[in-house]
Image 1 (cartoon, helix red, strand yellow):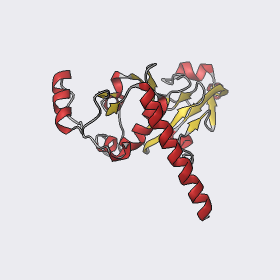
Image 2 (tube, one colour):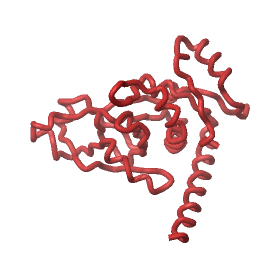
Image 3 (cartoon, one colour):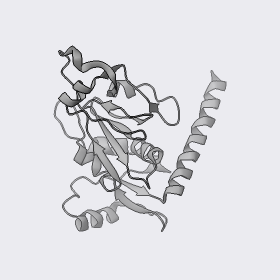
Image 4 (cartoon, one colour):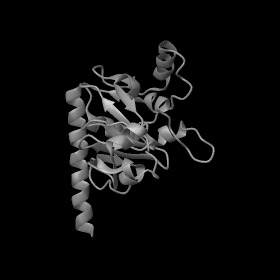
Length: 208
């Protein structure tokens, strides 16, 4: 279902009324129990940071620290989960930078170099500035948001800015529009997608 969705909502953020009027013009039909919403309305988006690499006491601590390269190349299952990256930082390193600890269940999304790597945090961790972490409200499924972001990446990239390389800001990511069913249905959709990925994995193994 989500793989066929593409909604360009750039320049539709002037006000709530104009935002949703333009959205209705571009949107596809959804069930009555669903609604269209933006990421910023259903969770928090938290940026990351990098401590100074020249200060040794900022590194090799007990706080997992994840970069886009840690997310890339690991999406071999239906849902990519991550507990740590190649490096870790100390509490001093955390406090010295814009990095923040995000909770288990946060959806990590690379916002540059490149845009579109994604994973769900398996435990509390921090990220570099190349990742935006989406922390969903209680009625939102992390897995559903993960699959939506993967499906919408092509559209998100179109709305990114930057001359030398594309980057998506927290505001631009927060403006991403998605169809939102009730939570139980979010979970059913995610389960079905995972079933399909599992079946595909079995087929690929048979072809090896």
